[in-house]
Length: 305
Picture: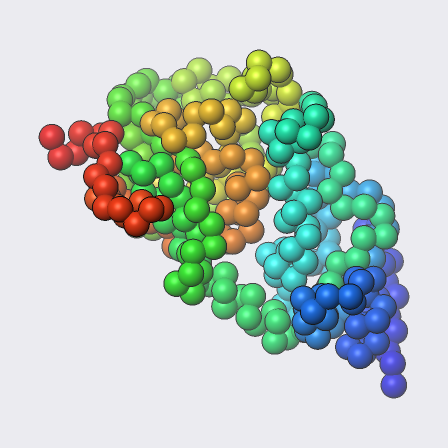
């Protein structure tokens, strides 16, 4: 017997069916092996009823989770991992990705990332359990003098991306109201807070950022991309993991202590690092490079001089 449930909420139509029916009605072309394999673990699908911009994206996703059957134990992370095309859509909003395609994006928060009639798959209990296990195993590993962040899951490296780290100096910061050591701290901790829509300000002056000057000299609105705050050694240093609108600064000691990434990588990091994710900020000078050679990095913080 096929069970059909229609629920119109927040511009979304829920359509839950017997899994055998979902395989042919979810709206994904079943012409590849990968698509068929994913569909075997689909319970339901959601049909998006309106255009959703980045500005409204988090509210929209929260409304889906809040109104879903609680027995499914869904959250935003599970929905994305069951629908990786959502992450692709968000990453495609990177200013520099679009610039390379000849498009100037002035107001990223207004960019549409979910379109009317898009289908969002709801995973079955087995798939949901596998996604949760994968996320629980995540480690964000930052080697400060290497200027690299790695996402490691179940011992496998999911992503290696360039970052910028804190400068080797001290400075008075208006937000702290005292002189602060700007070096990115070394130690181990976990993600304790996520700002989905961060309030961005100049840490030196305390003034809010409404716009940003890009590497090409053009000004745009500040993008909406989550910031992650870790505690390191049980201390909140304010060393956030967040995107920078100036990727030319990646690979340098440039920030006020934060770990900066490009916009596209920031989305990948966010969706693999929920609250409680292990974070390691290390300072290893001796590494093996991509060619398999042992090299010694520059001691940017003069820790061993």
